[in-house]
Length: 69
Image (cartoon, rainbow, N blue to C red; front, side, top):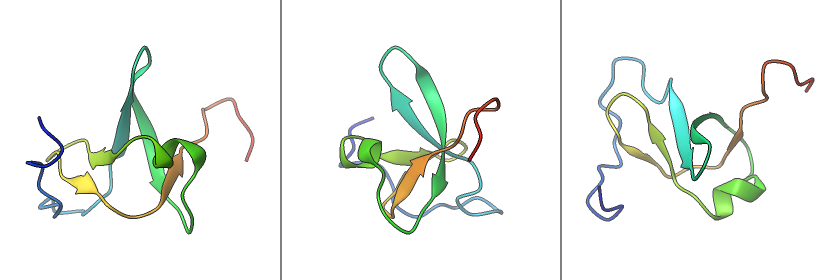
């Protein structure tokens, strides 16, 4: 879907609860809301996995299960 046609309002019951970014060669990767943009957020748009709405706020990639914060 063209990014200019994507809705920017999440209509899910739990708004923005399942955010992802699609990275070439890695598929959909989970992301978390953040106070500032991470490096990847400057290059890609995050979206709600359920409804597809574009997330226009700062986010960062979620830590991988075996990574420490």
